[in-house]
Length: 192
Image (cartoon, rainbow, N blue to C red; front, top):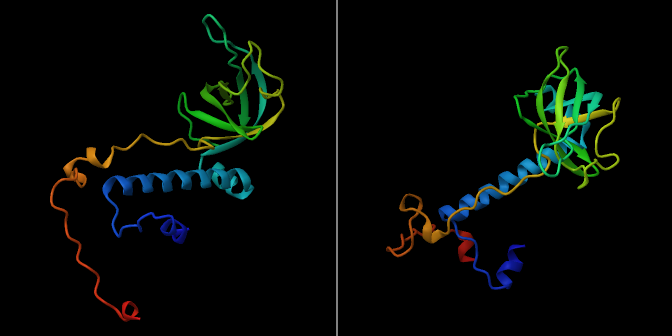
């Protein structure tokens, strides 16, 4: 808490953050808000239904699974799922979609549609390290799944420059005369 930080000798939080500190705080808050929104959708069926209506997720069943492999020295499995859904997800070519597998997100790429409108998804991770996928890591035909278009865990964004490397347009490097802050007016609470 704030009291613990002060007791540990940390300075109090300034009234106005410098540009780099403000950007870091904003990025952390945005990342945590996105993580909270994703977790809420995964935990609450009504929130997931809202995401499905918005085209940010879809629910469907696997019609078939075709095993394909990458080309190269060590071929990797890339199963292609044919998924039938009545939802209308907002998918473009190569859009990543995510599903929960053993508490972790599994990623697949949308690669197109069949002639009758089913979705083609290529699974690309969480299948083990071998030439054949681990048991249970690839959905079976007839299985019902829910995929999302939003990632389930947030990755940190690009790093921000140090305060010394900040351009003058955003507060500039230190060295110039500090701008004096005008103190707040004295109130009754200050005189107690």
